Amino acid sequence: MNDYFCYGLHVRSEILMPELKGARDENADVIVRYGNVNPPKDRTGDRNSQSFNRESGAIRLWMDRVGGLEVRHGREIIVSPVDGAEEKGFRFLISGIGMGLILHQRNVSSLHASATVIDGGAVAFVGGKGMGKSTTAATFHQENHPVVTDDLLPYQARGERIEVLPAFPNLKLFSDSVETVLGEDSSKCPRVDPRGDKRTRSVEEGFSEEILPLQCVYVLDWGGPKEALSSSRINGREACVELLRNSFALRILEADGATSEELGQVSRLVENVPVKRLTRPRSLDRATKIPSFIRHDLRASNLTVKV
Image (cartoon, rainbow, N blue to C red):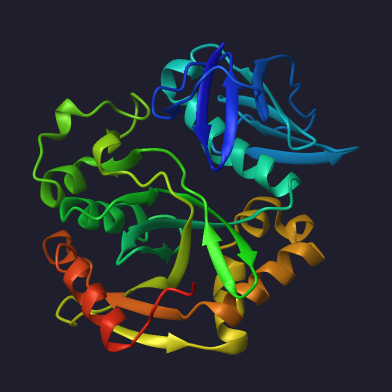
């Protein structure tokens, strides 16, 4: 068994997950083990096909040509990779969707977001697939801001303060982001999947292990090629809609994820944390200007961490 720590939980796993932070051999909160997860009878066989079903405290996920997970009672993940899937990044399915479902079963809400540390608090960046969450986190890492998460950001309310839990010290980046943003040879970073272009890059020396107050959420958006970086405040209902759109539970489980607890957590987040839209051009060269813009924007807005 391998022992890890992520999202505030001690994970003991039969599958090797080297991207996660190692932990001492102590009582585990979550067990990851091999077992049988049967595919649905009506599966399509398409590479991108996936299906969920739920029953009596368990959530089952099956992805064709990848394999299945069964997440039980917030304490156990049964994994059933198809032949060859472990060499093609199956472990990232566990550390991403699998752990997100564990947190959901523990009534801990999460955003589909990257996050970094600025002035002692966390700043999150939400957006759909391909919106540049990981690349944005990489721009801050390059300027010595610790990474909090690359993809999944759990949060919890402590009175009027919203706190976020760190993930693990890793970024998943396309080759052009590794080379343009980090200035590194992407061929030296392992591929997430041998068939794809996404790379995995350790940030062990630039990772925050602390539970941090969340001071702002930026919704990533694209502007025109010559448009300058800009931000605008999003309030009330619109802010709730944006965060629900980027809620892990709603994105993965759709209507089944819209529990009263999830809706209440998003509402509390909007009440206590500013939500802003960040508009920027589709240019990796100009992405490197995001950190200085965000630092100035936070200070100009007089956003301070709640203590």
